Length: 146
Image (cartoon, rainbow, N blue to C red; front, side):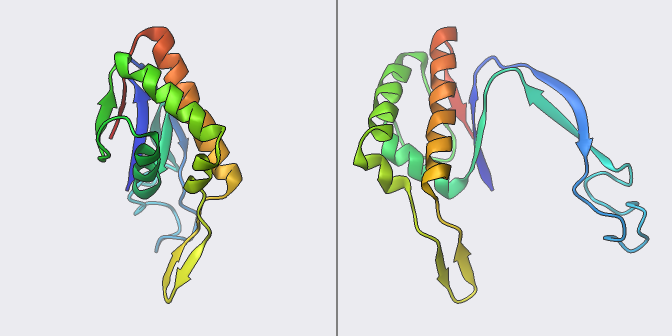
C-alpha cells in the first residue's frame, strides 16, 4: 500500500501508458488474461497538473512523524494555514542532523527484507514534498494525503 501527497484543486489529464506485463507472462502469451490491461498492452493513467509524491505507508508515516504537524495517520490534510509550519519544519529537517533520522539501513531478518532509505532517497523525498508545500502555499491550497 502507499500514500500519495497531493495539492487540493489539482486537475488530471487522462491517458495511457505501457502495461507492466510481458508477452508470455500469462498462459496464452497474448496479454488476454492480464488483470491490468485486459489484453490491450496499455493501461489507463492520469497525470496531475500539480506536483504529487507517492511513498510507501511506512515511509510516509515516518516522514509525517518527523515533520510533526498534526496527527500521524494514513490520511489527512495540512490546511493552507498550517503549511508555513510544515515548510519551516521540513526545512529544519533538510538542514539538520534530525533529517538523517529518516535514513534507514537495509534490514534482512529471515525472509523479511526492507530496502532501507538512502541519503539520495531521503533528499529526493524531502525536496519533492518541499516543492508540493511551496506550490500549495503559492496557490493558497491545502495539501492532503491518502
